[in-house]
Structures are given as C-alpha cells and as structure tokens.
Length: 541
Image (tube, rainbow, N blue to C red; front, side, top):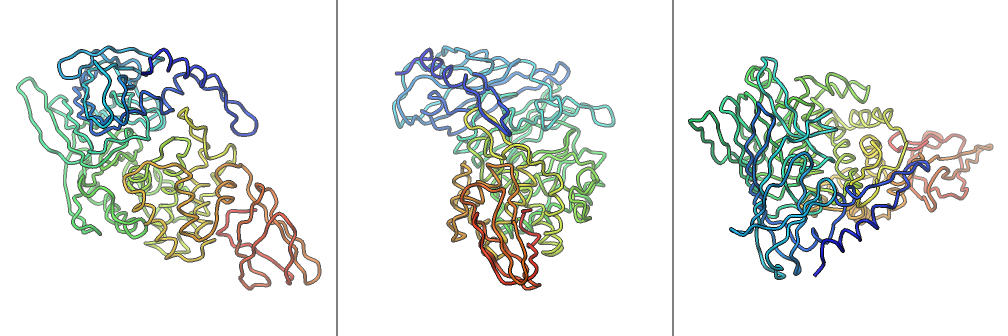
C-alpha cells in the first residue's frame, strides 16, 4: 500500500526537472504541473465510470456550491483517490456512503481522498465530494478560462464556463486528466435563478421551478465525455429544434440563442446542417447521436463542448467577420460553427491523453475548415483555403509539447497541423483513400483517448507508407523542409535540406511542365529536365 508521503516524494523528484522547448529556451515545471499533468498512482488504480454533478450557482455573489458523485472501478487494490479542484474553490467534505473520508491537499489543486479500506481489484465503488467557493473568473475566455460572469446587451446575467487546458477542476471536482473519461457518461444538475435557463451537455431530462425563485435543470449524457467538454451556460435563451437526417438516422439538433437573437439565429445557424453534411462525409457519422447536437450562444467566442458547442461569433461569417485564409473562401461560412463543431470528431470522439498532443484536436479540426470548403465549393477552393492559412505559421517551437506536465506545444498546431495533413493527403495521392483514413480514425478510436503515436501509426498503416519522418519533421521540428535543386543543361539534381535525419518524403513536382512524383532523400539525385516546380499542396520551401 502506497502512502501519500511516498507519492509526494516521488512527485517532488519529477517536477524539479526542466524541459527544453523551442530554440534552447527552458521551461521549468512545478509540482502543481506534475500533479495536474501526470497519471499519478492515485489516479492510475481506478477507472472512471460515471459522474453525477450537482451545482447551485449564486449569480449575485458569483458563488458555486455543489457535489459530485464519482463512480469508479478498481483496477488494482488501493485506498487513496486523487480528485482535483482548483483554488479558490474548496472541497468541504467527502463521503463513501455515510462514512466521512479523510482529505489531504497537496499543492494548490490536488486533493487526496482516503477510503475507509482498500478497494479490491475488480470492485466498483463511489464517493461523494462536496465543494463550494467563488470559482476563478475567466480572464480571456476561452483561452484563459474559468467562469464568465457577463451581461447580455439588455444588462441581464449571462454566465458560462470554459476551461480547456486550464482544466475542468476550475469549476467542479473531478479526475482532471484527459486519459480517463466516464465510461457511462454523466448527469449534470444545475440550479440557477429562475429568470435564467441553464444549457449543458446531453439531453434535457427534467426542469423544475421552485417557490424560492430558483430553477433546476437535469441533463443526461449517455456517452463518455472529456472533462473540459462539460459546460454550464445560463442566460435568457430562446430555443428551437430540428431533426437532421444523418448517416445513423435522425439526429436531434437544438439551438439556444439569446432571446433577442432568435430571428437572426434562425437564418445564420443554417451553417449547422451544411457542417453536418460535410463532416459526416469526410469523418463518418456524428459521434454522439444519443446525446444530440446543440449550438448554444455564450459571452465569449466559442468552444467545442461535447454535444453542447458554444457560439459567440456575433452572427458573422468568417472569424468575427475576417477570413483567416485571405482567399475569400473563409467568408463563405461561420468559422466558429464549422471549427468548433469539427471538434466533435477530433477532440470529443478522438481525445488526446496528454495536452502535449493537442495537435490531434487542432490540426485535424483546422483542416476540417478546408474540407468543409472542399465539400461545398470544390477541391481547388479547399486547397486555396488551407494554403492561404500558412501565413499564420510561426515555426517558433515544436507542435508537440512536454508530456506529463499539462504543457501544450506551439500554436502552429492549427495551421501547420492542417498543412501537414494536407501534405499527407497529397503524398497518398488518392482522395477516397484519404477520406477512408479520416473515417477509419473515427471508427477505430471511437470514444477513446489517444496519443499522437496512435494516430501517426494508424495513418502510416492505412496509407501503406511509413510516414514517421514526415510527422517528426512537422510535429517535432521547427524547420520547413527545403527541396534543394540545381539545373545544369538538361539535368536537374535535387535533395532534401533543412530536414530531420532520414527525411524521405515524396513530393509531386512538374518537370518541364509534366507532373511526376520524386522521392528525395538527403543525398543528391538527378532527373532529366530543364525546370522543376514543386506542387503547392506540399508544405515545403
């Protein structure tokens, strides 16, 4: 039986090490980073089965009080669970049945709860965790999240949560590591003043108003759900619904705009069925038919909360009215509806185990914008869009971050990640095969957490080509590979430069106007010809 003191000593050894990121710069991580980002022994021994979250929101005092029933299965014998809750919130008590449990806090946000006796491997159990306090106020939602205590344009309360990266434990106690999700979903019960309506994940099971001026909504989530995908949104909402005829049958689609925006929403939100049509084509069936799809207006830009996608793009096309690609195609759709909904496949269905692999969410979903354009406006338009987005790439630090300390890599995971996938599509050279790889990822890793290696290996296997050096180049290095060429008479010599060791990516070129594939390495090779132009769809110099 491990004791907390022993675990803490091991953690202290791990957190003092710094990590090299980018061009020799050094990032030093803390004990809190390790407790947040690693699968500690107090996390590893139990598998999460279900959450039953109950929260009362005191809007006037910006105060939360609630409880979470955490159901689990013991994978091995142990008697201490790590539950996370971030300051300034406090866990006030924990129980197993009627038995109070001993609680020890380590660092700022990790709470270790000791059971009355060790759990037996294979057994199931549950604990109830009670908590309260004034949760962290969002500083720049959704990027620096927490609780947004906003007002709508009529001066009425408008409350929302956002917490990717920061962690769901900023507003509710949970096992706040992405590797584990509740196998059987969760129940979300939210009580707010009765002038407001809470909209959370899944389907609305019940709504009850009380004489004291409060209203409680109960939402049922049938599928596994990642922690940061859980949300609370309280406002003066209008509501309407439609049914989408999808690949798996009828899909319930709910819209929750603020009441005074209903008319504009009914027109503007028509991008939702267009999104579903395109993404079910490219990625396979929407992954959460049992929980429906909803689009919910919030006081920040938006976020990919599972089955409860949040929206704050001001009812404009593009990204707040701007085309991020500079091609014009980005103004053909609402960026937030398309991008955040794309995360239902890549983030909520396929979820990273560690935020260091966040490109799995953002690279694929950024490329989903191009695939949306491709589906509705043609292949060249899709190419123009993703290539146009290259202008935002910084090549500052690697896309993959540092593991086990809740550390993400470069923001290049968006546009560079998308262009890497676009390059791989053209290496494969068969759009239907590429589409089946995308659909296969969502079927093979259905409702699973993954590593970058899992995704990389799957793509290589299905492509029929070892793409490991391509992934190393674009995910783990900051250089853009350069196809170096020289021309002498009717002879062209070529090789890869500015590349990782062993880089052997094929590339499509036009030699004297005739397209063909070349297979460069770091060694000079030659081909007959007088001019060579690389295909623009390959992200190279």
